[in-house]
Structures are given as C-alpha cells and as structure tokens.
Length: 319
Image (cartoon, rainbow, N blue to C red; front, side, top):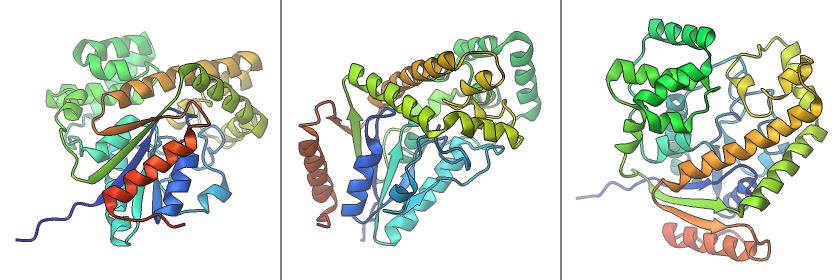
C-alpha cells in the first residue's frame, strides 16, 4: 500500500520588525522556495508603506503570493486566506518548489498549518447589523465586553477597535454555539510535512527596532500614502484603513491630533501588537525558536535553520 506523501511547508513567524523578510528571502532563494505572505494587511493594493511590504527589488528575488490582491475597499477574511494559501501550497509543491508562509498574523497562519474548520453556515446578516448598531450606539468597548463574556480567549486576542472580527466572533458563537477559540483548540495536528521557525528578540531591542521602523515609514511617505487613499475615496471606517499606521494618521490629517501624537500612537500600538503576536505564537505547537537579539549570533542561527530544512526535506541549499 502506498502511503500518502504529505506536502512540504515552511513557516517563518515572529513579531513585527524582528527580521522575517530578510531571512525568508535568503532561505527561499537557497531552497527553491516561493513565499506566501501570512500578513492580513499586505493583501491590499495601494497600501505599501504602512503594511511594511517588501521592496519591489526584494519581491523580484523569489516568487511572492497573496500580496496586492484586493482593493482597500474589499473585505478579506481568514477563511479566504485559508482557501488561497492551501491551494498555493499544493501548487508550489507540484512545481517542485518549497512553500514558505511568512508573516505575523497568527490566526491566518495557524488556520492553514492546522486546518481550522471555519463554519461556512454560521452567518446571519441581520445579527451582524444588530451588533454593528450596538458598536455605533454604545461604543466598541461594549461590543468587545459582550464577546469577553462568551469567548474570553478570542476577546483577549482581538482589540476592541477590530470591530469586524469582534462581530464575526460573536456571530459564530450566536449561530453555531461554538466559540471561535473552540475551532482553534480542536486543531491538534498539521496535515503538512511542516517546519515552523520562530524568531524572537529581546523586548527592548525589538521595541527600538519598531520605533525606528515607524520613523522610516514617516520618512518614506506614510502620511502622503494615507492622504492619497482618503483622496481616492477610501473611507476611514474601512477595515483596511483600521490597520496600524493608517488609523493613527487619519486623525492627524483631519486636524484632530498633532503629527507627534500620531507617530507616538503608531509606535505604542505597534509595540502592543508585537506583544500580542508573541502571546499567540507562544501557544502554537512545533515552533523552533531562534533569538535574533545578538547580531553576532545571527549567522549561526541562519546556518542552523538551513541545516534543519536540509535535514527535514533531504534538500541541499543552492550555493
């Protein structure tokens, strides 16, 4: 009897600004890889600086997927990501290449690596409208508090301002009787021949890198990027415009806060986001962690990761 051969998959995760892009490009080049973005914001066209997309010359080095695929006015869900990424993993394996999922959106990535079963029938437009009215009339905190009462695990993960996903979590609970976190807890294994590489860093150094990255985004034209999106008619209430770096700049452009406050808010909220990312990743199984704090040790870390991939997939890197 022939055993089913599991598809290969490498995942590189870690908090924002830890160095995932540089590592993924080096590994993908050396192992005939193709990169699938595991970031929930990089799917949007016209949103480049605030989402920290790789530069065009970096994107050209190896094939990339799930970047610049939808308009900022469109909605995008974890179920859509799961469908697309699962299909791409199969196609990349069939081409004889090694798929890499790279990013920091834990729910998106784990939905693929451990095949979360999202209920396609748990939808109720009337309930969604009702919950949206609750957020509009009583505030996002009231909506988030309602979620915390029924699904504290998901509420801990979602920010109150992430109204769309808070509503979706409540919708799943009200329609199916299951919590969104139940779907995650029930996934105990991966269908893939899987390697998950986790990058971490001393908190103070990571926060310094985050602050520096935000400064570079401002210098690169983040304010102009947000202004251009608003000028093109993308409403400030869109899910895409609630992304980090965008929702903080909008009040500045409306004259409601100073530029200094807007920039400081981006830095602070990005640091909090990195903390939430690490909290999510640390409960995921099968991660092999590498501390990227000391630049002197980074070449050794990269060499060890290459040895792990070569040993796992019996594949020598291209020199």
